[in-house]
Image (cartoon, rainbow, N blue to C red):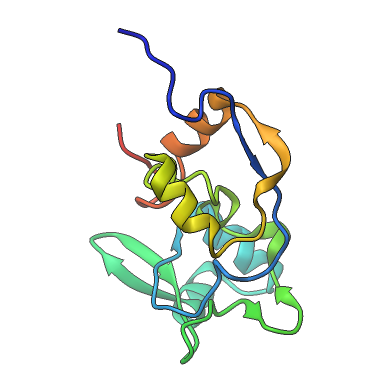
Amino acid sequence: MNSKPWYGNGLRFECTRSGNCCGGAPGVVRVTDEDVAKLARHLNLSDAEFREIYTREVGENELSLKEKSNHDCVFFERENGCSVYKLRPRQCRTWPFWHHVVESPERWSEEAQHCPGMNRGPLHSAEEIDQISRDDGTFGGTGPS
């Protein structure tokens, strides 16, 4: 049986850079070796220096960006937003199309209560959402099979 997902007609999203997904509660922002390399280069650091200063281990062979004491991402500034927005990790770039957010309309609606960009802006097709959610970065760069 080949049924359409609940979002078969697509979903609207446009990042407003509100920062609501960047802090306020403890979390994990997984970074890949590629993310580390891009961000390290941007900050004129070696990969090892970047890892030491900006990341923490969160699982076997997985790294997350560190958080400030208020649980904001280390790169999020309340006044200016994300200081590395153009180079942000895959997990950040794929929000809100994470597999566990698009698994049901209820979960989508729950997240939309805290994200002003959800349900507005350009329409993203079901095919695009499926592709993003399969490799959303929330599991060390690999979504569920």
